[in-house]
Amino acid sequence: MFGQRALRFAIGAGLAMTLALTGAGGSIALADHGDDHHDDHSTPGSTRSFGAWLYEGTCDALASSPLEDIGDLEADDSHDIERELALTPPAPSTIWSEDEDIHGTYASLTDSPHAIVVRASEAASSDVIACGEITHAAQGNDPFSIELRTVNDSGYTGQARFSVEQDDHQDEVKIVVGVWEGTSSATPAA
Image 1 (tube, rainbow, N blue to C red):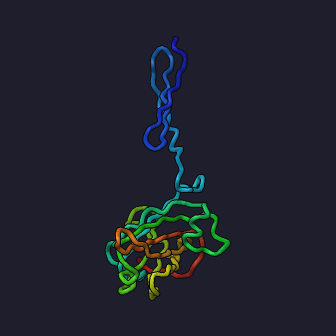
Image 2 (image 1 turned 45 degrees about the horizontal axis):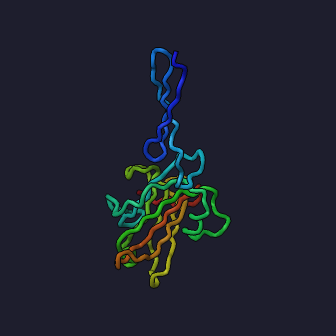
Image 3 (image 1 turned 60 degrees about the horizontal axis):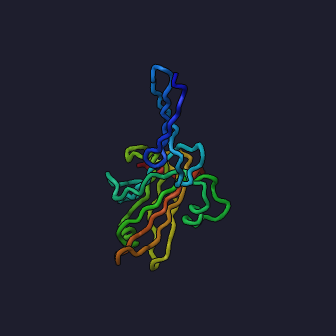
C-alpha cells in the first residue's frame, strides 16, 4: 500500500540514521550508519586508542594523580605527526598521537621530576604502556624530545616533543605525544 521509503537525517557531526517506513503496518526501523566525518587522520579499521598524562615524579615513582590530561591518542597515518615529533625516516606506519598546550615554562617541567605516561586506554586507571621522564636541561626555548619507553612488556614505545609557544602574553608549553608498536627493554613500575 505505501511501498518502502527511506529518509536520511544528518544528526550531530555527520551521524546519519536511516528511518525506513514500510508496509501498511507502518513499522519503523532505525539503522545506524556511523560517523562519516574523519578529521583525525585515523587509520581505517584502527579502533585502538590510548590516553596520555603529565605526572610529577619519575616513571618509577609517579604522583598519585596526574597534573595534566594531555588527551586521548588516536591512530594517525598522516605525515604531519612525523614532522611534529621530528621523527627521522622511516617512521612507523601508524602512530597514536595527541597534543596539548599547558601553561608554564620548560623550567616548570625540569626543576623537579616530571614524566609523560601513556596508558592502555583513555581511563587514567588503566595499565601504563609507555613512560618517559622529562630530564632535558632547557637551552632557551629550543624544542626538545624525550623517549617514551615500553612498560609492562606492552610492545609500544614512543616520543614526546616539547616546544614553547606564546598565548595571550603567557608562556605555554606544547606537548606532542606519539606512541607506536616497537621494542624497548625498560619496564618502570607505575
